[in-house]
Image 1 (tube, rainbow, N blue to C red):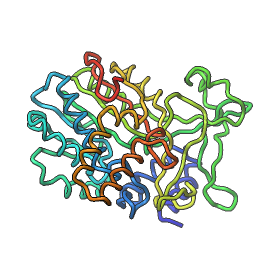
Image 2 (cartoon, rainbow, N blue to C red; image 1 turned 60 degrees about the horizontal axis):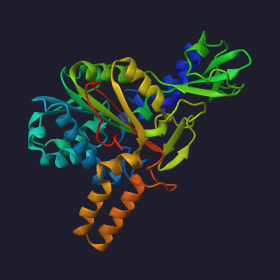
Image 3 (cartoon, rainbow, N blue to C red; image 1 turned 90 degrees about the vertical axis):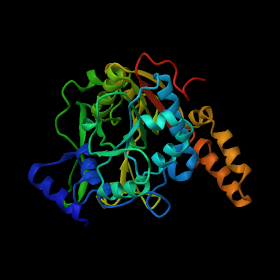
Image 4 (spheres, one colour; image 1 turned 120 degrees about the horizontal axis):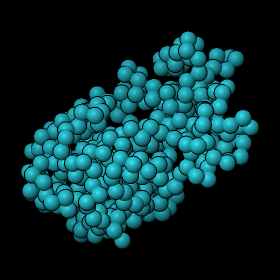
Amino acid sequence: MTPLEAEIRRIIAVDGPMSVAAFMGLCLGHPVHGYYITRDPFGRGGDFVTAPEVSQMFGELLGLWAAATWQAMGAPARLALVELGPGRGTLMADALRAARIVPAFGAALGVHLVETSPVLQRLQQERLGSRDVPIAWHRDVATLPDGPLIVIANEFFDALPVHQAVKTARGWHERMIGLNPGGALAFALHPDPIPGFATTMPPGLAGAPAGAVYEWRSGAIVADLAGRVARNGGAAVIVDYGHVGSALGETLQAVGRHAFADPLATPGTVDLTAHVDFAALARTAERAGARTHGPVTQGAFLRRLGIETRAATLRATATAAQAADIDAALARLAGTGQDAMGELFKALAFADPRLGPLPGFDS
């Protein structure tokens, strides 16, 4: 039994079953035993590989996207470049290097990293500490500075706690985590239906058959950022895996050592994620006053930003082995094969309504 499982069992024994979202929040963010608090999970030696770790091209293109968006904003003299969940700092390092081709953009920047993990923050400081740009860390978007901002969020929203509701003959009941008769963690349903839940669901989903599962997340972070870009100018781009339209289905999963795992078996030692509902993100952003762009597939987004041209440039001075790696990275990031990210991952932006089409979203 992991230390976090023992603590979760104690909480349930005293307070009763907890929601899936509360369980996920503890597993990932517990201040002592949380998955992201205690380790570096990225890369081949960790539990999973994200796009910035696949190739420098990903971060470079997002850096150029940010520079082009800043120019479309009228090139404000001061800009907060924000990354949510910056991992090892790989994406931001690549983005800043690529953005050097627009010197005025670099001169306008203050970098702001939203990070809750002390382990990852130390890695970010090591990777970015020598950059000639001011960098600040935040535990929450609420402390970001006022003014124009550009936000990058790659594989951030899939790790935010997700609620689940299950349809029964009596209505929609929230799925909980409780203890089975043997004392082990187990899924259960809240005994009472969620009052008025069907009226809050997207059209067409409330009439689902018994046994259907619906997932949702808090929209607080998107609402905050969308309100900021609508008031102060700017844009945000979200790249993550998920579905374009709101849909039924259970997508909660655990991953450890590059393999799927039981989400209840070893709390705090495996990553927990669930698919992102891009339609829900877009609705929240629009209600907060922003204009949305996309979603489009990651493959389409990266090709429109020029990933094939960038790959060709890198390949021109590469060895045969390096060229093969570049081709493999291109296929992984923008392709459609079983292990590729190009179709499963999507890109969505929201921005100041006064901005026109954004790079990567205009066909």
